[in-house]
Amino acid sequence: MPELPEVEALVRFLDERATGHVVVAADLASIVALKTFSPPLSDLVGGTVTGASRHGKWLDLAVRPASVPGPGAAEGGADATGTAPDGELHLVFHLARAGWLRWSEDAPTTPVRPTSSRGGVRAVLALRIRFDDGSGFDLTEAGTRKRLAVHLVHDPAEVPAIATLGVEPLGPDFTRAELSRLLAARNQQLKGLLRDQRLIAGIGNAYSDEILHAARTSPFRLTRSLEADDVAHLHAAIRDVLSEAVATSSGRPAAELKDAKRRGMRVHGRTGEACPVCGDVVREVSFADRSLQYCATCQTGGQVLADRRMSRLLR
Image (cartoon, rainbow, N blue to C red; front, top):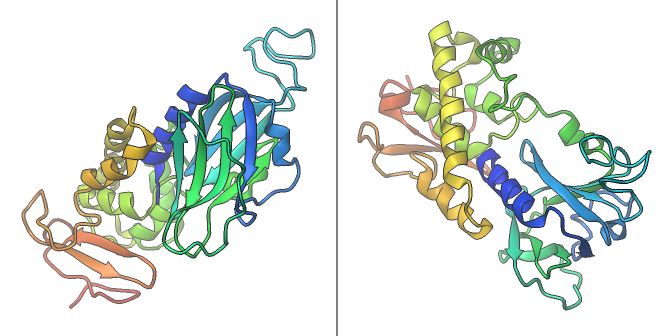
């Protein structure tokens, strides 16, 4: 699943390549991917892309419809910043576990055919956006569990999952004091807090493993057990791990981001390999639909976590 660093890289990629271009086609292939019906996707056609942004793991492509005055328009059009105050559309989408954005400098112009809601393991087309210079992108999703979500709205806050997002971990509001408040609000496992989008936006399974390894703490440690020094270490680990991953991903083509993410992992996805810090073996705890990786020497004082749901430290 793409997380904050990869989504940020995709946003920068889209912002650089799509801003200023006119949408000439918005073709839906998977009806289950589109979660809204008004305004219709056809309202994007003829509109000009004004930029791309990110909300947690959500991508947001802003489009000014042809009917809305652009920069330099008469009174009632754009404001002093050159942005139309009303009427802008936002194509917001979440790639979920198996979705991806595939950019093409020469996007296909053949008619888009409806795709099966099943699709198997191979990636199938969900949505195609094409621009006036011939470029464009496809949103695709592999697997049988279709969770890729596309919304077309006037305001991103109309999407409940965006409206309820927690603090941005690389933003100015994410202070040590704010992290302390989140840790104290409910006594839960650290891994769960880091992955809860309503508390901290953008961190998923992979980077929570990396953050906890960098902070040298157990994924199952309870949040209210952290002392002031522990909070400081965790706060620094969140900032450092995500900032490093964003820097590594930045500027890469969309097609290279998945491999770059895998290469940058120290423990996540590296079960059985040597920890790059201490040399101990990286271990795994498996759940029904996911797993986590950790180093016992670095994170749990040498104790091995039980490999079962609701695992606790072995005694």
